[in-house]
Length: 299
Image 1 (tube, helix red, strand yellow):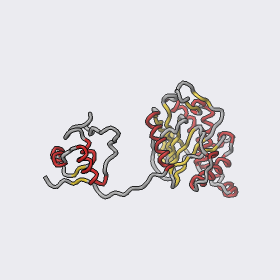
Image 2: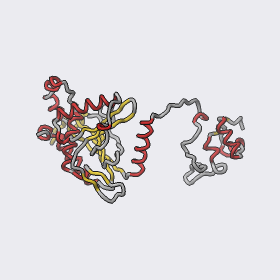
Image 3: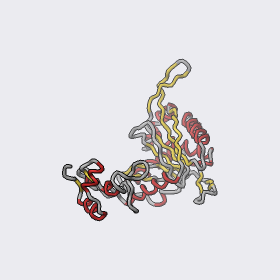
Image 4: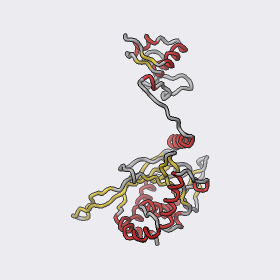
């Protein structure tokens, strides 16, 4: 066999465990050896399913990537590490399901166009996201089970008499979720202004504790980037999260007539311990109905 290729750390591990590198490489039929090859419990052996057996306290991810080619390292910020831990725990512990649907945005876009001059006069950028926040706030009033949290022991449902909407903001420092308080009591212009203010402060890392936490539900939007759908992770103690992607033109048949209709994909992930599929479908249908008539929604 050709000369064995192995990083110094791999050779050191082999010496510590009394593993003959050449013999192990021959058994595995390769010349490049990595950490996981040394951690295999006997040549060619492994755990059920073919994964190598691991020593206590080690992980299949704990490998020497440099054994396969050049690498560099970039430290994770404290904020990113905390977010990763929370998301990992949420995804592992909550039985999550995502309901997918689409909303007709013709009425919203027409209403936005009619308000363009007023928006310019007010100095406010009236985005579709403001309509989504307003609609979601009213939807949470109609479906109080979505505006709740499960107690830590899983035995009680805590129903809230306030509606705060979290807005996930992509920043250079990681994902941040500032909160619009009492969104159901605010008008469209106030919601639009707060979205712009919170997003700007999040990107500048100028959000105080009063602007974070306590959301009834979160909206995470990829509309400015792209995509046709995704499965957002519920952010506990919330019970659901609404994902929004880019509006696309879909051909919709109205009788025998095809119509080009701007449709926005909606992705509602929810905690299946509290919310079932029928609940999610009804919630999304009501949200779509609100977006189809934004003037009535804002009365």
